[in-house]
Image (cartoon, rainbow, N blue to C red; front, side):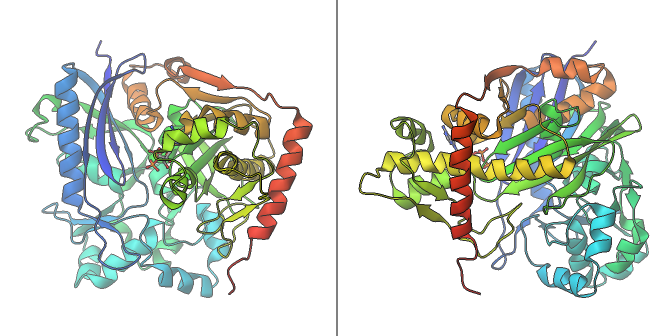
Length: 498
Ligand code: ADP
């Protein structure tokens, strides 16, 4: 029995490949960073050939280092990024338009002006935004000469990054997208689990160019013969796929309703498993397909905090009170509280549930006794408060509580911040041993298909906890501070004059 799974983790700044064993441990890693392309202010592109080439090399390196036989391949990817290529030659007709790219904002405004907001949210679980793939497809078809006619004739194919990688790996045999990625296109009906004719018509996108939507743990195809460097993988099934955030939710073992994960990266990304029915949010959160396995679909609520770890970067680069991110912890721990200082890290406005683009950062409660240590502590608290606001909105929307918050991402190593988070949410906060939860999620989906793991329970067993933080402060004290935070947010909101 082969027991190793290769996970391809195609991210926004680098392509990585990780081999996992049955215990969920990392056996080897391959990684290649690649260039961002900024043709204009607010525009972001990647070269699809570079995405493939760096991912191929990462896979080659990981497999070579591991020196084991691979049972299955799973894929996870930066979501929403849009690629269109020629069916006959495999050549992209334009660079990949990256999720962050704002070039289609005007198309989004046009859709809103035509009154499409309600219909789009009802069908897709999303709000109209340039992030999602639909308007990016339209932009390429409208701007590359002849593209629209060629698409109509069936000569062009669209895919998000997992679609592109699966197509390349299978030698052009499989043109598929998994449900979690499809649900980020603004063309996919999350109730019927299929492309929506009305939405495609709205954006004038020929449906023949769309990939076939497939489950997240299913056979998409086998690795083709003769891919340079990947010869040893020929014939290996490609059989698991999920967008990065959904893969992390899966990799964190959040298989039951009310289980949630938060990634503390530059920003924070929270997903909560809401079970088999797509709950609609009242606080501006997105409803998305988490995964679909064996005919059973699980949905999630998703929200993000714009400034998470970037707040710590600001202490380093803006204020210069620390030299490196890890220094924030001993500095913040050197005082027993923030001395009444509250930092609202609304550097670029506030997201869910506040949704205020005009909010700006605020540092309140400063006295002559305030030191850099108080500010460092207020920064960690400010991140945890924002996550608390968002999770409280999820609790309300989903009308169920969260038993445990599973955490990952670069800033989750801060023990103090995790303790503050647990005190605020009044639930345990669990940090796993293997923090590569996104890559593991994709491996788990693929491994589940071939029987490396036979059930969700077995996958959960491979997920080992490193440390769990429990509420320690009296609830009344935490609540008092949280109320202060809410007052501070009120001061930060609407700061920039319209
Ligand atoms: P991303 O994937 O968004 O690039 P990462 O998951 O790599 O982010 O996390 C990077 C963030 O983690 C940085 O913003 C940094 O400030 C923060 N960080 C890194 N090390 C620590 C640490 N020891 N304590 C607290 N925060 C940290």
